[in-house]
Image 1: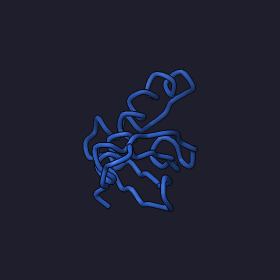
Image 2: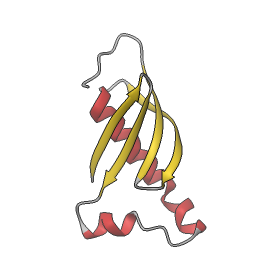
Image 3: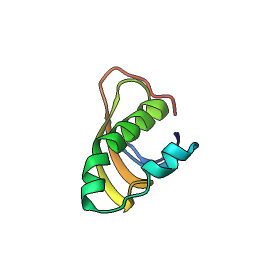
Image 4: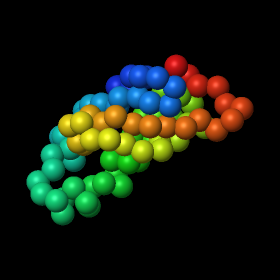
Length: 87
């Protein structure tokens, strides 16, 4: 899975998940509410990885707001003190 992370302001960004394989393309298709609940943790891991990739290992997902869930979200993140991001 590739990630497109665009910083909006300090602590806020847009994350787009870009599936590369058939398995990843199937993952981002939500069939119903139960399917969404079952996949929620997996998406949170991907969002967290995207934030760490963009802002460094001490950056953590703090919350998300749905745009076009699960592929596009508005995310809030925090960076632990004393860390430097990769942006």
